[in-house]
Length: 372
Ligand code: ZN
Ligand code: ZN
Image (tube, rainbow, N blue to C red):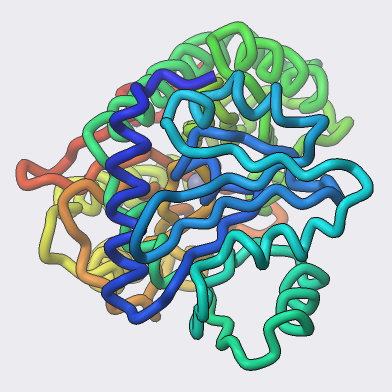
């Protein structure tokens, strides 16, 4: 399922072929996974032992190699509307030989999908011992990291859908229920609001809230406890949602309120600063300095955020070690947290679009502590 017209994919393919040519690469080979979906709209099975591979030469028309029994399936997706030739390989044929035959004559350098199975890479190396193999990441990542307007709209739709789930969370969070019971209601709501998949549901009550990647447990939620709720999934077009809000069952502990305010201010400041020109490292430092200045530095134990699109975690990573200058159209989470080990924790997470005005969020639910 795709909400994008063929022209969107044809533009991506053209830019990928340009990037291939600019790097002196003869062809780009893309196997099932987010890159294939990005370039063709075909969400092929990543776990199939039968080879599916897009061959995008530096010059000339792209070709898509597909197992014969999946040709009808491939044609039924956007990939069938792009005017690219679908080459079918019959079940008993040597599929790698067929793939080699689709490459430009005397290709010297091939860019292979970062997700290509090692056995295929090795097969290709055996068949083409003098051909250089390089990673396709440097060709495709610069395209994927800057979203097109259609992709930004897709992320806004995903954000609006997960916002609708957070709107319902206070109704699910009742003292006496377990995290798992609440998580089940949340998962149902994620699907009911238009997502195709539920990818993660974190309901971290009390001390579990201090463990950033806790999921759900059979722990019974108690009155007076903060609860970190971090949820997301993929929409039918493949774009992800990811948003965290922290709730409290009745009156929060005093020390919790103190650090929640610090966190809230840091997250606001980071969202406002998310404009073209700032580096990922500086955006991370901005929030970290505010949290450290209030004495909670050692309790902010993860990076500020991650890029998001067809993968829930992708470039750019908003982390102290990343000197990347953020550009218009990049999309990423801003999700600082403060965690008091063994007691409780808090995180606030929104997906941001890097744009001149700053503070351009896909998630619009209030960020003040929600007392339920
Ligand atoms: Zn999250
Ligand atoms: Zn996240």
